Structure formats: structure tokens, C-alpha cells
Length: 203
Image (cartoon, rainbow, N blue to C red):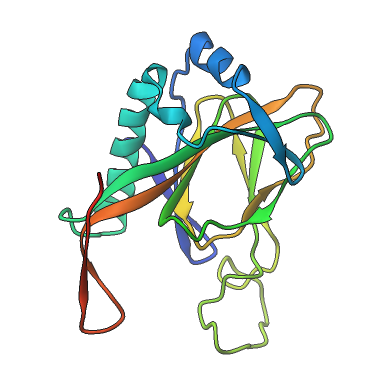
């Protein structure tokens, strides 16, 4: 097994730790061109992990995504998940990453390139019964209204459903917070919410 699945609210989130990133890979990310993003800086390239220097990391990600969606969630092996875009973010001291979700993806991933990073998930958009509101007499992981933080160190990776709103709180450290993010798309036969099927092709 490459990682473990943790339940955050009612959602399965995959966590793996300890991938050995090289100094050359980290320097490569630092030396990319960056543009302004809401709260921080984001690489201009959206294909960062296609660079040959990241080929071993991309293979590792592919294997982790397969373990997450096939072995843990149970999606058929005939459906293949592939990295469709990838980028890097830098949060300097005092910077943050705004709350957002990815509508152009199915599984998202974040890889920490520095120590002491925190990835936060917002609870307010997750509801087991989305069309109903119930009073709760106690707080559980299924009814908790507090956001959930995952502590991440260098080489740690988190995979999660693209519908989950996530963000990064203000960087209170004296060092930059650096991470890689990626989207995935699928290839294979997909069942729609109708009797129709959709065949997706990934090139």
C-alpha cells in the first residue's frame, strides 16, 4: 500500500507520506515563472509535472491515484485516471491560498515540497443530505461545522474529490510554503445520471 484513506466528514481522502523529493526537483519548482494568484503566487505553466525531472514523481502519483480510486473507492479498473494539468504554488510569509474547488477535474492532489504545511478543507459545502437541514444534538465527523486541517511535510501528498472546497491559511512561518497541485481526468466508459454511457478518451 502506498497510502491510507482517512474519512474527512463523509468523504474519503487519501494520504501518503515520505516521498523523497530531490533538491534538483525543488530548485526546479522555485525557478519557474510565477504569476499573481488570489492570496499567493501560481506557476504560469499548467504542465509542471510533464517535465522529465518529475517523471518518477508522476509515476508515483499515477500509482497512488489508482490505489485511491480502484482499491479504496472501488471504481472499476476499466476507468483510467490521468494527470490532466499540474502547477506549483508559493505562499510567502503572510500569504494564503483562497477557498476554491476544481470543476475541471475528478480527483485533485496536493504535494508538499516544504515542511510544516497545512491543507484545510471547508465543511460548509458537505452534507450527507444536501436537500435537508437537521438539528444535531452532538457533533460528529459527519455533522461537524469546523474546517478540517491536514498537516503536511516535505514529500506528503493528499488526494481528494474535486467537489471538496479547500484552501491554505495564512503562512505564519518565516519560510515560503511551496506545493505542487494537479487535476485528473478519466478515460474509459463512464455511466451518466441517465441510461446513457459516455466513452472518454485521454490522449
